Image (tube, rainbow, N blue to C red; front, side, top):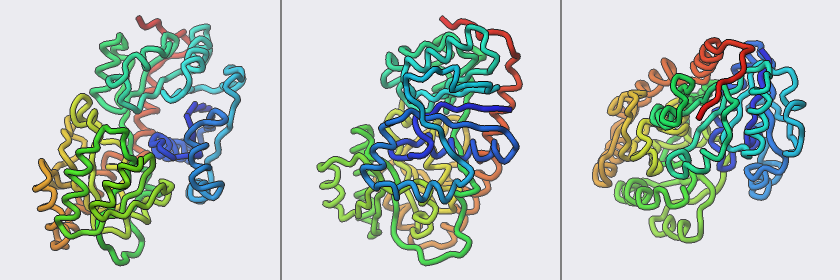
Length: 370
């Protein structure tokens, strides 16, 4: 099958979590013999910020980890029909411009002989619904949403059985425990600041508990304003700046444990969406403790795959236990890995994607959604 995926960027993961998942999915599709093309607009802000932050060398880790992947940059004014060419399956991510999304949909509605899916991996459908409603999806065959609560939003918008929940997952070709265990110490958090969506939660469930548990704390991520860096400094946390996602496994391998601090929308309005960092951390075999988060879809086994803290005091207690109890750490690692390998790899997600595509008959035009 010939597949074209319109992404914001494949090359850059700077504040662009979808690139993590997309790399793993495309890599597996290629391994199965599919002809895959990733297309990203020239001058996209993720790549521009990566280059400003780290220069051309910032792409080295991605290129080394994914030698089989390339992407084609395109002018936003380019003819989408030429970009699609003879693809059998076209997937368009929601970080693309509305004009491009609409133009590709128009091609499908006019009888384009390809299956067309919209891929939503963000909370804007609830945090800024008009931004998503601005997309003309009337020509699309269906929607891939990265959580059941997000799928429900699209169902309320009229998509019915043409929306599928397609969770993110770990690329276990890259994200796995180290081949040889070295010294581990302290706590690590890999995450971006969050535009005010979890500022209090970061202090209550990460900074203060790490300090109170007597654990050093390394923080990797971007978009930390001066006031955020000052907050980190008050708790003696080490802000390490941006790191390419392809280096995350080696970063996890140096630390005793990590913490999941969900953005507020994923702990309230869109429960059940863990975001990709949880999948990746568990796949790397690092013990994880989560701030309050409702695993509404039963993706994991809370208390076995990871620990859950309902407040800062409980988080501190969990971190101390992990520091002092190697058997507890080993049990969490084993259970977390087992769940990832059983249910949440990019191989599983490719199986799901191919099953979805198989249900869509071609070459009938896409239906109109109100």
